[in-house]
Image 1 (cartoon, helix red, strand yellow):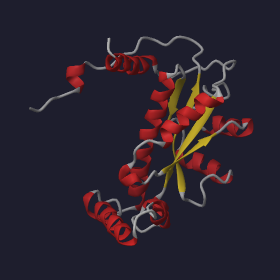
Image 2 (cartoon, helix red, strand yellow):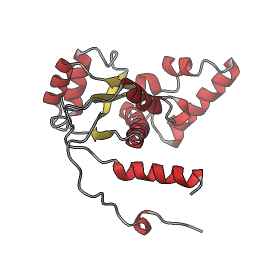
Image 3 (cartoon, one colour):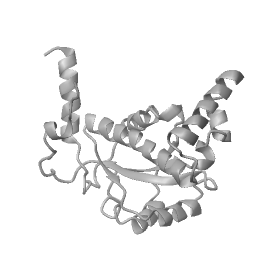
Length: 222
């Protein structure tokens, strides 16, 4: 096979390998270099308008892990066994509104006239196209949806180098935000919990992967 065919097969094999790992081997630890690689694929992920409305909190502190475990039924089987545990936060309406200080700083590399034009385009999008300004929750949910892009990229990147993962939504949002606020991680409402993900090495082999047929999932309009 040529290089392109080999690369495609390697990527598909990573998707076949990846599964929502229920139990991690507590005796195996991801190397610092490998985990930095995983985080970098998240940092380099695309976002709407280039806002990067996220933050990755890597939780290795045992006390905080225990608090998370007791607050999240979805994390109960993953902590403390997972090698690395990441909480993905989303920026709230305080940062993602078209006129926020965060966006002005985010796009400060633009010349002043270009910055004004770009923020005006975002205003149009938020007000009229997606109607995200009708309620502050809409902007928050919009940012949360975007965090699933780096989530997916990090899990795929991990799988490509033989590392397992499990995304976790099994928690009460209000309770988890209360915990994170107490820990000083939400910056006075500028962030909210989105999703969590555990990384490590599987304790046992998973059941065979199942997916709906290709023709049911993919429809071509020609």
